Length: 541
Image 1: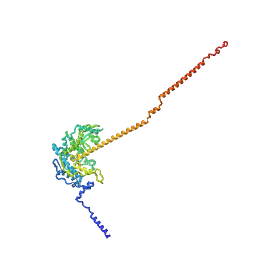
Image 2: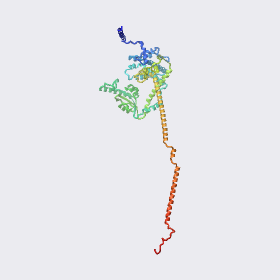
Image 3: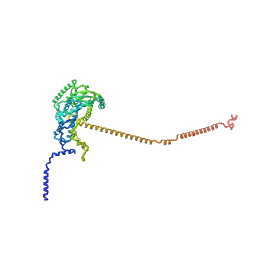
Image 4: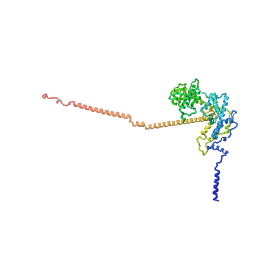
């Protein structure tokens, strides 16, 4: 039996190995565990859209009694799902939640704007809408492919553009976009120092005609150099086109900016060919030479550079120093209008959503975002905190895309996108950042003041210490006076000395007189002696 036991055990192991050689197939019910993996940050496979439940069939919202139907919602939502299907991927739950939420909010605000416009008796500018749609397609070769990649349609984009124009019309109606001369003056005083130069400048616009086929890559990137024959042919064709455009530009009443938008091949075409204000060294030599030779309002003949042929229009020439207000007024007005439009949209949206009765069915179905709840609670025990937990570049892109953003948008974000809440969130974040920056600056300023006070206090203490040291070094006046001899005593001694000297002098004088008196007495004859010595005998004489 002992010998048979190992054999049986070996056979059992072989049987088990054979049974486990093929992995078990996952069941449909097992998909529900993927949501838990994603919440833990361990998702390896995208979760299906079905985990959020079905789309409501009786509409996604109601605005003042007007329902937003599921059909309208799905026209946009299905396009978003199609982007993932084209890449053989299932949409992640996080992306699906964002699309459902943002598309619903987008449709709600579009309906709010429609009802408000009707109430005010205003409508969007249809000519502006046509220009916007034309500009949107400019430079995009495959428009249908572009729409598919964005998850949009012609109709969905048009509704976003209309919403933007309705916003502008409402704000205009209430005078929210009005710019006064005082506004321009104040802004000019702020920005004037930024435009001070020590060189001559011009402001110009241009229309560019490229040389060669439109779909040909730039010369620097063109590996297959064209033949001399092709180059000559393309240059001749481009010059002929440039000459025709030049003729049109010279016709009285022609709007050069509109001509540039229509015919220019340059990236500045959407801005009417405007190149702003520049110095000579900012442009290629041939272009600068022609631009700086023009008088204000003049249009050049076609000028050839390595980029092609340019038709240049000058709008003014300015010397070194500050730019005059007239040179910057157009730019200032555009900046102020954009600023007022941005702030006006934020205020208008908040006002209208407060004014209109909105029942957001989709929001009720979705409930609170579990990822936001997770961010509030923090990371799970044992899980390392990650930088930017709960956010990613991909998720931001999804959100922007759901709101009508994406590549190829010639004018940046549309009001449709802002209508979905993204602009408000970003604006709040920007305001919060500004507030934090102000607080930080205030703290720095306080810290500097505190440091300055400390430094001043230290300097004051140092001065006091130096003063004490100086005082300590100075001799005591009393001691100095004590060391000094008494002036009165000194004077008394001097007087006594003089008196002594005077006595000595007098004594010497007395002695001298005595000496002189003795000498005189010695010379006089002695009275007692007879005068025998003088009288000689007569016989002797």
